[in-house]
Length: 461
Image (tube, rainbow, N blue to C red):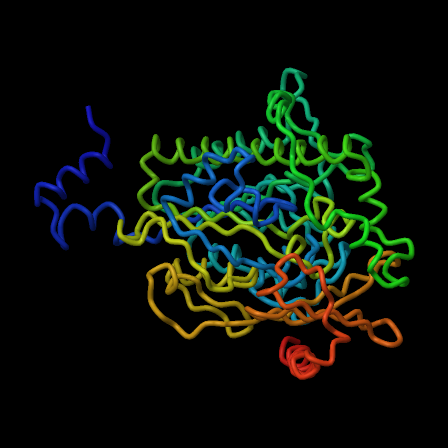
């Protein structure tokens, strides 16, 4: 017996399906379902499809080969509470005003987030995992809620009291949602993983599923070039004074043994997510939902794996602000599958893209852009730079802001007196080894990017 997808493909090949025939009954007249998969602290280069030859991510890679891979995806703020607020709202931090872990969305702001707008348009909505914005969770605003406050723990117990990993539970909940959603409504499911975030204040840090403990056992992870102590030593004194990223580096990467175990633990946590992606796609096929369900995978921010002598995120280096983005839309023609896009995509693009895919108007308040025209290989005018801001108030994380272009990266620590600036030529210096801010040859570039940064501050609020 053949399944529905096989039947449609064979019928199409035989010339049985016309523009007004069977295919319309299956997908074209329906609003698409949407599954949004958000990892926590996954940097851009931690998928096989992004050139990592060590990590095992077969389901992420398959999603990319079936869909569209965006190589240059960035967050506008690299910390989970702010980035998640930007993802929900499609706005920069200076507009949505969420710059810490305590502040909730106002009622008006929540009403303009993608899940609520989709629900009001008839979508059945679900949320699973780490919510990350404020202390009061909007459980009543969703049809299916398995959201978790704060930082959840990886080690859980099942109904029989047996150990079970949080990522596995979230996979079970995702399948439960797919079984429970009404057949006469489109759905939007947001799955917000904790992985591969560390377990804060636990000395083990990267607490992966024991089932994956032997992965990478015989592998030696290469140490990044900029892990050399000279790169951390080159930072100014104010930056090195009790810096949170250095404190966490000492816990995770300060010895060869710590480095190997930490990176392997990080990779194992991501493999757990990869397994869940495979389970979700298999369930969609089994339930006849695969032909009309969009799947989007991205991360809320990047993550230092010892580069520049740092751990965590927060600052403007590529390791911190660049994340993966895969968009799988089964409605795309075969000729557009497997694309690799070079354009700059941002976390603020997620919400407007979802609304556009659902056929809804994008609110004027949203500052991101719909990615669908790029996926369709159209040629819209597109950004060639973006604004970065990190306004989180923390005594051991200096605040910063800047502008990233295709060629240059400008960052400044604006609370210092005088303001401390960084300028990198990403074309000749992709690892951001040499700060050109004091080089007379680049003074004109520096002046230009200063002005652009000032302009963005005025326009982003």
